Length: 456
Ligand SMILES: Cc1cc2nc3c(=O)[nH]c(=O)nc-3n(C[C@H](O)[C@H](O)[C@H](O)COP(=O)(O)OP(=O)(O)OC[C@H]3O[C@@H](n4cnc5c(N)ncnc54)[C@H](O)[C@@H]3O)c2cc1C
Image (cartoon, rainbow, N blue to C red):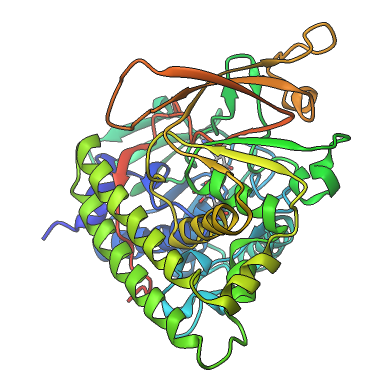
């Protein structure tokens, strides 16, 4: 029987990819994919004692795949085009948590990988700052690879599609892994990431998600008062920034502060809500997996958004909970607006969807503040003072400067109608428009998946 997991990631005979438009795609998801990929390739005898593996890309996925294959006794070469491993996380102070995105599954708060009774993973990690985690991964990688004779790691070595050729004589791939060296491999596994982030509108460029994290500084690291923030987007990047700016915290910490040590009388409310959300999210994931049109996606995501909103409204009927939500919001002086182009958020992790709707509904209901602008779309961002500042696709130069934003209203993800435009001003503009499809030929097409939480 053909293995469905292998088939889904196959881009050519013996060439497989777990980079590109895979969804979901958190670091934990990528590590699970990498480990599953190697296990399944080993079972299918694509790799083995006489069939070496070439892994491309030294991020979380490539490191996991290479270590796991080498531990199985497979001769493995890992090539990375950059001079540094884990390049996205190594400079970032963002908080990462391997299990937070599994909320409201019961293990979500464990914050470690592997957790509970899941099998060993090559890289072990716990919630913390991205740069510390990347440093810990690197020392584990160095330590384990020292005792693994089958693993060789080569930095500064890109491998492109032209470097690969099928050898029909013995059913292997001949791959040029350096200018001097061509070697046979049983399989190529591309772990080349999802491509560059899209943070631009015209000549305006916002800060990258994995760039320097100014959001944790006073006044978000600007000299301005008031700080006027505009965020464009409604995926995990945009929602995480909205939460972080208003609460000064990351989602797992926010949810713990909300729920921990609640009076016994209030705890059942959380239990009921978590069950309702788990059920709605599971249903939405399954429906999205088979949805192929924007119209259908819209219906699924809209229903999901409405269920979250109903659960949030139940929480906000309780006085004890209202007090907790009030305490969560620490940055009231910041004027923030999140622009998103439909009635619902896009595919994102449940904890981000839930907490953003909670904060937004609280601010609207209790403080009469509008912080989210649904059905809007940013059209242009230009300097408000062109004599002194011109946007030239330089995020550092634009950050903190006053800009004029033009946006369309009454936008829907399903319609292309002529928008009515409005304008506003902001000095911190964050564009979180996902990933620009990369030209890298080793990537998969957009694929929606439901990954196991526990690998067998
Ligand atoms: C806006 C945004 C927010 C995110 N937030 C979170 C979050 O809060 N938590 C979380 O868990 N995840 C988050 N993610 C997802 C996370 O960034 C990815 O899951 C993770 O970095 C993917 O790891 P990877 O190893 O697959 O790819 P990468 O980390 O991108 O590594 C790919 C490697 O391949 C190398 N490479 C590429 N092409 C070649 C080639 N031809 N030859 C040799 N080497 C090559 C690259 O140089 C790179 O080192 C976020 C992503 C985005 C875009």
